Image 1 (cartoon, rainbow, N blue to C red):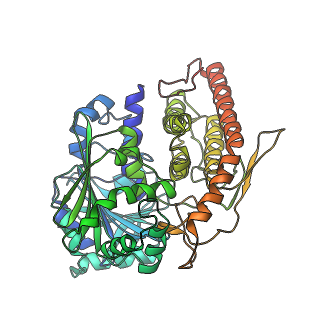
Image 2: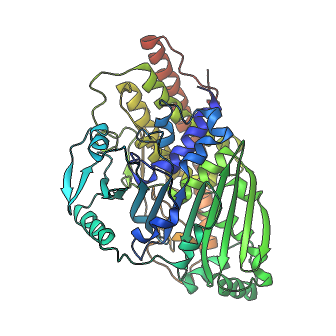
Image 3: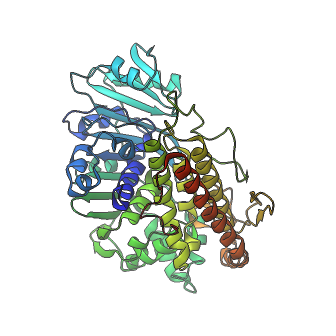
Length: 518
């Protein structure tokens, strides 16, 4: 499998796998027809034209329509070729960077039966609120919302599912915000919108702005920008894929843009850097100020940039423990039985290649060093992604390699946030201890260690964030050698697993995406 195919497949997997189980079947339909299915407090909406994506030149090159490649398009489960449209609504907490719930819907062709879907997933059907449903091992409920529509709910709460079914059948579902409704007007194969009205606290926002380099030393500009940002309506990301990827990130406000709006782009870059979620493509984006919107155009958008943007907006947020060890046992989402038919080389190599594609992204950042400290979130997101890779048919030794890799990424993320690492000399075990945060956190402050992004637990208006960041930066610098050692352990174990797999299957598991291939 070529490097490009692997990266593209994992990228789209990052998009599709976010609602849990992807056994969704779709016929031609308009996304607007499903907006009334979602609760009124939905604040994030995604529309994905799966069929259009798979018809693109990039998709054909990567083989997304092939039966075997469906695993990589879906990320966690096979995605049938008849899927054409998926609409997902969710409720997210901006300050805590967590998602409370998500619901996905897709239309179903007449020839597809729900019982067949359940059998394909290896599950038995049950009745919830009068509708056939089944509980997926991935922690979601799948239900026949109507005779023409499949619904998927995460987390898998049966009572909530029953209420959702009842709401849809009543035909009196509440209306989601006008901002999210307007998102469906955009022409894109992927459209993601977040309603951010009234989401920013005035004083916490001002506190963060005072600590930025962009507005340093200018109280007047801090006040102007904070007043401007308080009128934030939301953001919409529109992605199109042809022979290359292009994207527009539109940030909308409730009134005409003031002159100070030109500071939004550098402030966004500072925020992403401080929170460890830097996206290089956003730094290079073309900025356009028009009417009530700031538009960041990325044409082309790099494969890595696409993966990171979609991961930042859409990824699920499973929590790792505050104290991590290098070899977690028994608590990973992929702890299901390996396979009744035993391991096979094809599934094992796909699992390995997916991991190496993600590691390649991080290793390039590590070698470039310029923005490596701003990649905390990507370490965490990729650890989550590895935890949720399909393991059917994967060699047990390779599964353990994936778990160890995930744990090392979490430890590296902690180190990049100022947490000292402890590396055992005898067995290369890695541990870290999360310390209480120094002060304010979240969107506008120094991030607290968590695998689901920045977490705020409180704030003081007069907090000295600049000093906190300086102290954390010194700790991060001091941990450089430890992180280098962690990467060397990763490289050594990569070579060991490749040798073991070659001896067992007589297949070289190295791929072009592997920058440390030996």
